[in-house]
Structure formats: C-alpha cells, structure tokens
Length: 273
Image (tube, rainbow, N blue to C red; front, side):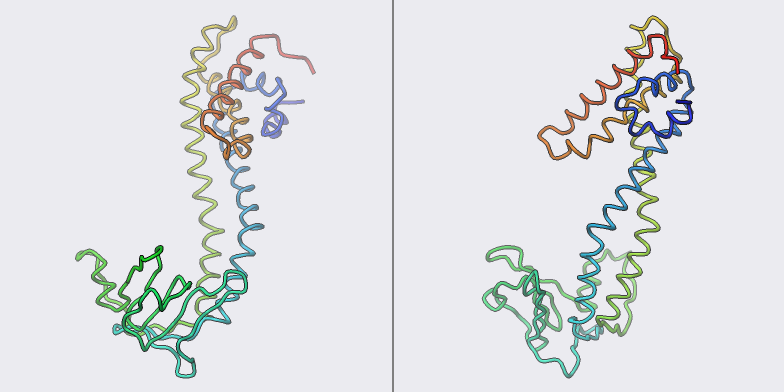
C-alpha cells in the first residue's frame, strides 16, 4: 500500500494498520494538518447525511402540517388579528403530538385552567407559555413588548403590518433549510478542524515525552503527524462511547492508547510491501 493509499484509507486503517503510522512518521507536520482537514471533512459529511436522513423528513412533515393548519394572521404594532372566517378559539392539533396551540383573540388574560394540556395559548396581545404545573409565562407580542425586550441602543423600527400564513411559514422554512445545508456544514467543518488541530497540539506534548523513550528519535513535525493519525480512533469510536459514563475519560484513554501504539510500532523497521 503506497503513501497516498495509507492517507486516504486512514480513517479506517489507522485503527489497525501499522503502515499508516510508518508513513506518518516519515512525513512532516503538513501531512498531519491535511489529514486532520480530511478527517474533519469526512465527519462533517457523515453528520450532514445523518441529519438529512433522520431529522429533515420530520421537519419537512411538520412544515407541511403548519402550511395547512396554521390560520392566517396579521401582526400590527397593536398585536395579532385572525382571519374573519376562522372560528375562535382555534386549536391546532398535530396527529402525533396532539394539541399544541390555541388562538383566541377575544381574550386578554388566560388562566392555567383555560389552557388545559395545551402548551401555548395566543391572544391578540400576548403569548402564554406553560413552563410547568402552575407556571405560566406571559410574553407581550405588541410593538411595545418587542421593543421593551431589547436594549435601548439595539431597538429598530418594526414593520407596520406582517402577514402570517402557512405558506409564508413554509417558505421561511425552505429558505432556512437551504441556508443550513450551505452554511452550517462549512461552519461545522471549520470548528471541528480547529478543535482537532488543538487536540493534536495537546497530545503532541505527550508525543514529545514518548519520543524520549524511542531508539530512533523523531522531529516535531513527524511527532505532530503521528499524533494527528493517532486521534483517528477517538474520532471514529467517539460516536460509540459518547453516551457511556465518563465518555471524555474513555476518549482520553483511547487517544493515549493509540498514541503509544503509533510511537511503538514506528520505532521498529517498517514492514516491506
């Protein structure tokens, strides 16, 4: 297996193949940096695919339900009004989650007994949120309420009229979903790449200590490269151990174990192909 193959297959082969670490030990730090970027990109791709396959269909279903069930409303600085053909009170009931919100523009104050098991009650001027037994939070949705919740230096003029319909909500959701798939994976990749680089820098300090016990000493660039590849196991197995007790400690042990393995196997003659 040549050095290019050990690089691109390392997310799997670094778990068991000494050749991966032999090639890393014979390279400079740049190989470790590029591998860290490659590993972060793979994790980002897997996370994006999992999110798209598991959560997006549920979000799509909820958006479609809102499109058909959400009553048409108009917001003005004075508060909300419902369409004239909508009976009040109007309760939105989801087929899975049950009754979620009730609209009644004829009320000013809502008691807990009037909410029943519904978590949200909307009037023309306020939203009432159930926080727990006997705990109801009120939020003013008039222009005065919105501005009072903002610092004086951050207050901006609000529009005089906003139309709210199921179609509008569905379009907002579609726009947010496009932004998510274009922006969030890139941000996630950047953050994960920086995090893995910082982790590699930290563990490379342990590598400097392990290097003192080697017969064939390495330059720091090679130590850093070995460290980057040795972190593969904690990234790959992190999905498994993240829900276990003391997951951070298990990840630490995995990283240190593979780091010791990397320095041990590369202090021998590399195996011939």
